[in-house]
Amino acid sequence: MRLTLSLSLLILAVCLFGTQAKAAQNAPLLWRIEGSPPSYLFGSIHSANPTLNALPPAVDRAFGQSHAFYGELSLDPTTLMEAGRAFQLPEGQRLSERLAPATQERLNRVLARISPTLSLSVLDRLRLWALTTTLVVLDEKIRYDNAPIMDQRLYERALQAGKQTGALETVSEQAGVFEALDWDEQLQLLEATLAYIEQAQAQDRPLLAETYRVYQAGDPEAFLDLLDEQMEVPLLLKLKLRRRLIDERNRRMAERIQGLLKTAPHTPFFFTIGAAHFAGHQGVQRLLRERGFSVERVKAQAFSRSE
Image (cartoon, rainbow, N blue to C red; front, side, top):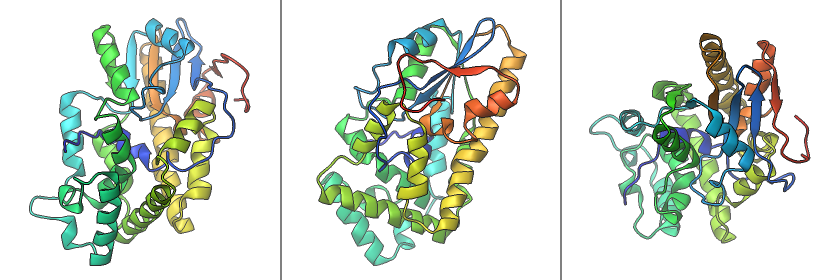
């Protein structure tokens, strides 16, 4: 089976499953950065689900008006190859050499339920954190026949339209989020993920079904609720993940967005980052306001939670 998973997809998968939607507003996660002309922030879901990839009219208009598209990562072939290498263990190493037999058996049961062709032997070269995040998205990748995720679709549209393209992060920065976890912490994350997948399989429900509803609700806070309420890992690890996965990356991306807007004030940018990065007091849009920008949510309809 061919797996072409971008790091941009994997890096947020760990915080996008298993949380309940607060409302069903189908509200676009779109913010306008005032300027002449304005730029936009869009909260994406790293998913290939075709119903989610039909952009709301307000988002489509904002994208069409932009001259530059920036995502979390550049999704060109060179960067994707670099991301693929970041997932891999050093030459000659295998996960099966370090994982306990009981963990391997549990993994193989979960993988076989996803697809009879899957087993640990197929994923044995992945780093432990990469295996864990891959598990979350495998079912969807198979269901949608490895179709491109929303971010990839937007990147390809930007190329076709002749827009400038760029990235707010590097592969090493994104991989560093999980590389900062020691082996025991990565094992805890794997066990929590396996437990959640096993529960979904026992209930015969799609793993990301609740995620779809959360995204369609237009409520970014719901994504962080998972880290606070659903992720069954020790509190210190939960806090570490929240800091590394969300807060530190938010500050880095806000700083780089600020730099781009200051350097090219007359260029209309369209910035696409994962929906979870707009939640909480450290949301990217709030950090930009603290830096002096006027940022307002595009209100295509009434929302259950004001921004």
